[in-house]
Image (cartoon, rainbow, N blue to C red; front, top):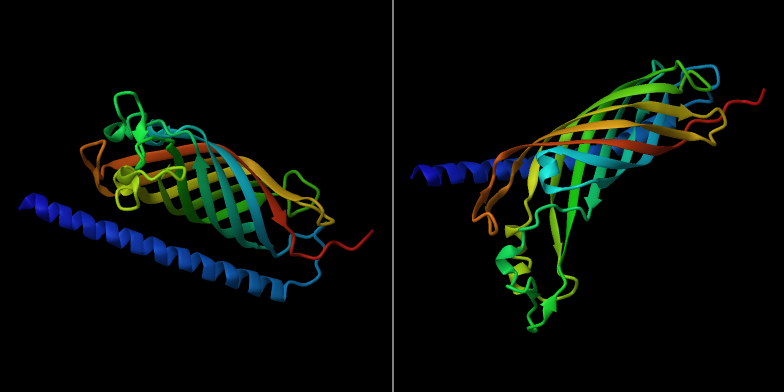
Length: 271
């Protein structure tokens, strides 16, 4: 009876978290659209060369990340592509919304598909022949970042060292690709029993350099990124574990992120 109650509570908790992520994703899209419209509609010609200005900050970025703690048990080094949009205030405080997609082929769980592997280390397809099955890491993050620029270096008061803190969510899992082979044990209904779906809260710190050029031709940022995921397994059962995957985890990462900023402000007048 107690086990039934615990399972019911876990399913309710899992459903609430997934619903929260859906609402959070919609909120990010709405706020990002509002920020771009409001800021671009009101920004005036400003001299970025000698004045700290109010300006939209929209960027795309790439990061190479090293997993730590529980994350390192499942995965190796991963890539991460991010999209970021927000506003830099005249006070050099900056707030933005960020979403990222992480991916790699470095899955460390060598026993993941053992329940369906034959004695000669093959997975049998529906036609009786061997199937080529690949496994990948896939994940998403979304967060709100608050940071500040310290203009101790750079060509103008809007460039310099930057420190940011973020709060949001992280979601990751193992993607299993049958490579067009039909493998009944890995169809859409069964593949979830191997995927290690994980979800939880995330904090993030970023320390680096942000450059907004005087002529709009060079606008970028580069820095170190630290991610702390306070997560939990979200599956009632995983076949290779012969039990639930619902323990609490510490999914940490450290990486280097490089991003290109798309200028929305007007360039400074010529000398």
